[in-house]
Image 1: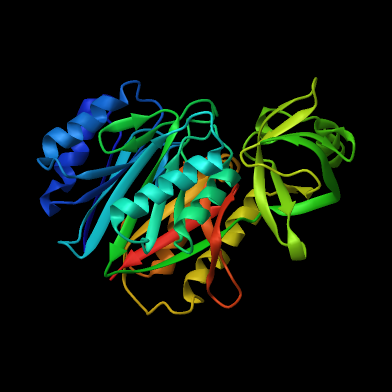
Image 2 (image 1 turned 90 degrees about the horizontal axis):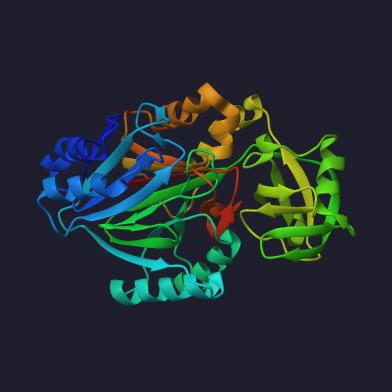
Amino acid sequence: MKVATASTQIPDPYRAGLSLAESVRHIEPELLFVFFSAHYERPQELIEAIYENMNNPRLIVFGGTGDGFYTSESVEDFGATCLALSSKGKLRWTLEKHSFDTRDVSEQAAACGKSLVAAHGEAPRLCFILSTHKVNGSALALGLNRSLGTTPVIGGFTADDRKIQDSLVIANGEILRNGMALLACSGDFNYSIASGSGWIPTGTRGMVTRSEGTRILEIDGQKATAFFEKQLGQSLGFVDKGTLGVAAYGEGGSFILRAVSNFDTASGFVELFGAVEKNQSLRICTATQAQIEDTIPSILEQHLRQTGVPEFEPALAFVVSCAGRKWILGERTRAEVDELQKHLRRPTPIIGFPSLGEFSPQNRVDGSYSQTHFHNVTYVSLLMGE
């Protein structure tokens, strides 16, 4: 498995794509992960430059916009990055894309997953997902679990430089402004997945008494914004969008993390990136820089506790980390790359992006994986190798 990476801060999209292609085409890749900042006004030119200069019309290009991007050495706010992979036939890839319509999101995700499996010829060993963010992330995960079964799904909502308005997904030569793409992988490889947060539930629990999709309208019979502001001791503000966490509790006291995407104090709703159901209990979650940074090593230790995974040398690391983490960590966001390289013990190619929602299974106590969940304010790392 050969891997090459490149990054650029060239502002012109065509020249940026050309720079990436020229840097990695020597390994004759079959797959190119590409992530770039939302500053490029003509992203199609970036993708066109890649295809024109890679001389491989069958090249799979999979990526999108992030709140910046991750490289092997740094976290950048502006520019573009790529990771090229060549397995010489050891890995088999299938890409499926879908533009969202008005149907139930879980049904659309299930149909897309079903089409992926049919095109791939079998259930993949691993699946990547990238999606624009204006859909119910928890419904998306539900649909994927229905169609992909126990296949782990890794990925996230693409982002747009903290505007939380528009983001893009790249599926080969097509740009999706309201859609999702799935990438299936099978073949001779090993992998491990780790995920975690650092956000800590605080205050008292409330029960959702009225909701519509991803909007919480009432908690304990009062406006949702009133509950949040009572728990916080202050009014909701712009800074809470993407950074204020919500622990949505399930059976046995376990919870999945959500984050606030929008709110309106007049009507009283609080909107999340994933749904919280009526009669579900929740608590506010907060985190400091130190809490987030201190949790990273323990998250990465999950890679060492997984059962049924032989020891292998990672050829690459794929990272999806909530943009809300970056907004709190600031310049200390680089710790998410530095700690990962320290864990890997030798320089390893890394690619990833700050997202508006994360998809991954959770690690069980016995070292196995759960079904795929949708998360917020979460750090997800995937290691792949032979």
